Image 1: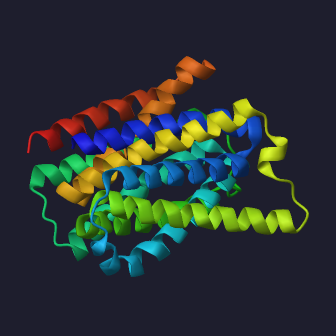
Image 2: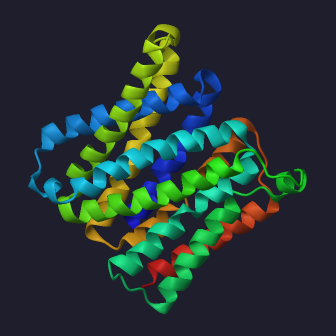
Length: 286
């Protein structure tokens, strides 16, 4: 549970930085720089720690495709946020945790007590409610929001990729699995960026100020700390519990928005926070 909270904190702060960076340099530059920076950092950690890498052979066949899937999920998410509305995109994405939890129970044989099942459901439900501004939803139209299909696709891909990553961490160790996953995803972004440049696009480093680059790099580092915590939690605990707790990350952007952007939370978001706390208490009591 502690590792799940660590993941939620890292991912939540990363979302705040992503909002700041995206408004300055755009979503594509932000996600590309962040992914490459995090891959370089985890590679450095791998060299310093020197863990056993033999276990990667047994998981690479699943982990590499899932890392590519995660890279596509990041691109879909950022495109969904560009199209909006955030009031629709955020709660859809927060529900990603349902997929790894169900897969962990069905495929890995993880068993949960009755209270844990209730705690998982309440925690994930509270996370979805926290990330939803019902006031904004009521102001929307009756047509399908343009970002909804991209958000749904991103949620499905993140759910599958997160489960495979957690399984790989259990089999090969959290650091080797994290290194292979991040390196693969970063390579995807580098290849796409190279294709864009070959077709006449401009180099990111040539058009972005140093301060913007620094913010995107910091985003990558913060996001990596959350993923490190999730990977370690999946290695030593239950994927279903770690994933459910990590889904509470929307709390941080919501209240970060209050401090940074002067936003006011909707009443239902405060209810969502209360549900998250109740769910964590149920999970922590087992």
